[in-house]
Image 1 (spheres, helix red, strand yellow):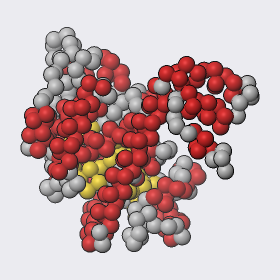
Image 2: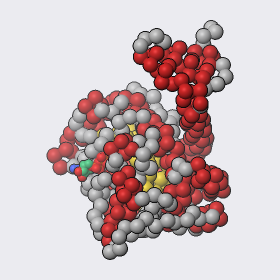
Image 3: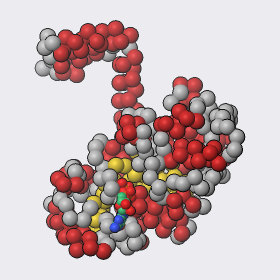
Image 4: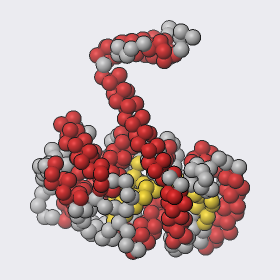
Length: 387
Ligand code: GDP
């Protein structure tokens, strides 16, 4: 993104309270690049503006009215991670819940370089031009390590960025997958409440993050490269089976023939796989995010998916599953956090880990010791030692 990036209502260009601009910029994300660009454009020295939090009613009414500046600030609130922001964030989510649930939730995955951002831009623009409001979110725990963000570091999505009805939010930085996934779920709800009718959630297709995204979307698209097979593309077979559709991207120019070859190979492979969302049968198509070929057809397929499965009540069932997966994640995350904070664990962890390293304890014994130190009731049951 260049220094001329437009200052958009949809991007929270002011730093969250009490945080330094440079600290934020170092943490990455296109929002932060824009932040930097905006501040660079002004002649005054960069000084973080402290913006007070809005009140609950202001957040609720602003979001309900579809105001992107309020939405952006609400996302900053839910992403804050500060204990003192949590009650307001949770009250806000609760208040907005009745306004959610109407958006189409679509996940997009694929290895780096397959063309996810180019595809999302082409699809997002197509949707905006046909009157939809589109929010783009990312689940990218790697950004915490690399300091980059899949939506952030590249000079992309500028066309979508300029669309009046698009909202692009990079992955929250500096978090584990669990944290990123949780914030993305909460951000999705805020976007739905703000009236966005399509959510496109991007994830880099090389790890657990696709599974996290699969559990928060209705329709899951896997983009693949022309030519190479799974192993070469680093796609895990499990991911192919999670997909509701596969698209071989870059089916243009010299790649066209190789794309069609890959299409045939994948069609054969998924023919024997269990469909991710029966009775929907996944298919393999070809597209070019660059020329736009196949984009309209792809969205027509997504519409068909919602129509066919909606009639059968399967979309409602998917939504219930998504809520349960969210609950599971929250419980897991909270239990781990409590375990790690427990005074007994803090005191004994180093010692127990050292004993494990020296071979004096097995890993189950070490876990048993620490769970007991954390005063988690009946850790025996975790290991079936009684049986
Ligand atoms: P991502 O890492 O998956 O988000 O991939 P990008 O969207 O950044 O694309 C990686 C590269 O592939 C860029 O240079 C794009 O211009 C190029 N690319 C993306 N889609 C297409 C396509 O359909 N055809 C061709 N020829 N190149 C593409």
